[in-house]
Image 1 (cartoon, chains in turn yellow, orange):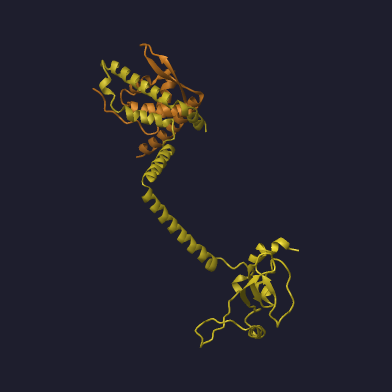
Image 2 (cartoon, chains in turn red, green):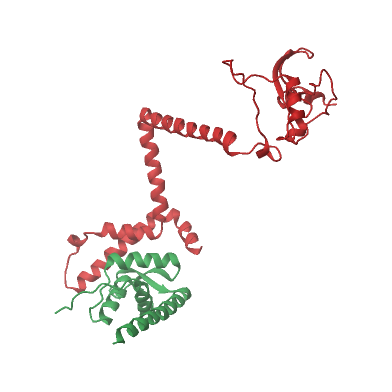
Length: 225
Length: 111
C-alpha cells in the first residue's frame, strides 16, 4: 500500500526521474571506464535504453498502463475505420441480441416454473375435433363443467376465454383486454386476484369477469376505490 | 585471469544489495556493484541492467533512500542508504536464504 502511495507521489515527476536515471547510469559507466583505464565512454552507451525502461517501470504500473495504451490504440483504430467498426459492432449486437432473446424465450417457456404454487401440477387441456383442420378448438362452458364434475384425475378444472373490448366509459375510448374465466379459475391456479373480489355465479355458470393487470395499471389504478 | 562469470542466483539480488549497503553505508550503484564483485572474488558480477532496476524497485518498496552527493572524485552520484524497513528486509532475507541453503545442503550431503 505504501508502494502505491510512493508511485502516486512521483506521477508528476516522471521526467525528473528519467533525467536522474540517465545521469546515474552515465556516472556509473564513467566510473567503470575510469577504473578500467578507459578515457571515453561515449561509444559504450549501447543498451541503456532498455535498462532505463526497466528502471522507469519500477515507478509505474507497466501492465495497467500497457492495457490503457492498448485500449487507446484500439479506439483510435476504430475511429479511423468507421465502416469496419460499425459492421463489427452490428454483428456483435445482432449476435448477442438474438442469443439473449432466444434464451429469455426458453427461460420463460421451458426453464422457469409458472408463478403459481405447485405450478408443476398445472396442465393445459385441449379439445380436438378429429374432422376439423383447426385444432385445438374451444371448449364449451357446459362441457367444461361436465369435465370438472366427472374428472378423477384433476383436483380442479378451469377455463378462460380472451377477448378485446372497446372501453368507452372514460373520456377517451380505450382497448381493453378481457378474460372470461370459469368459476374455479382462481382456485385451480391457487392464487387470488391482484385487486378486487370474486363475483358470484352469474350468467350460466361462466362469470367471474376480471380485467387483467394491463388494464388495471393503465386505467383503474387512478380510481381504485 | 578472470574466473567465469556466474549468474546471480534468482531471488538473492535484493539480499546482496541490502547487505552491501549494510556494510558500506551510503553508497552509489557503482560502489555496490564493485563491492559485490570484489567480495565474491569476481564470481558474481552485478550488471547495470539488473542493478539499477532492482534499486528503483527497492526505492519504491521503501527499503532504501536515495540522495545525490559528491563522490571522492568530485562526481555527482546518487547514494543509496538503508532504511529501517530495509534492515528488517535484509534480516528476513538472510534468514530465509540460510534456511533454504541449509535444506539444499542436507539433500546434497545425503549419500
